[in-house]
Image (cartoon, rainbow, N blue to C red; front, side, top):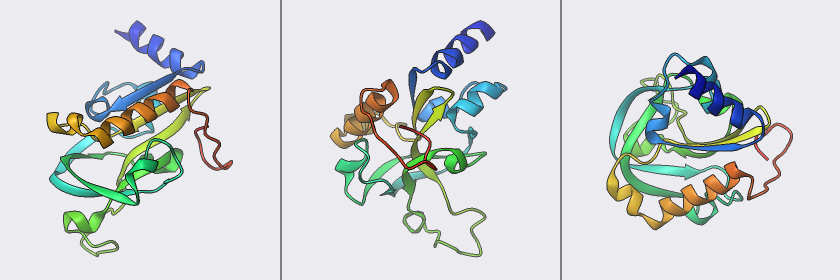
Length: 169
């Protein structure tokens, strides 16, 4: 309901946190507030349901530090209708050559696909990841650690200081 939506958005804006996985980016269409909270983008398509490589962009962040410089995973990778990079701090991104699109290729209409990010929404914190479509993904210890540490950041349990241009503390 509209009241439930406002309660959720108000909860986060007031300084609390929320963690969003996979289908949470394919929800609440028509809600300007929800779109803003998640970083601007919502589900547009999922052209890559295959094994893909994710690049770790912030190895010092606890939610991805255990993943090295990158990792492979079979999952359904969402493309969002707006890139969250402009207002979020990207933790993981899709390695384009792993899906057969060379970076900078003239055939690529876009070659930047954040996979996981953190951001501020009002006084609150948001952790979002596109990963989590298949059941076996939820049984991978590295994925579960990514989620738990991302949730702890969103809850304010892991304090992480970023440079002024970055959006989540």
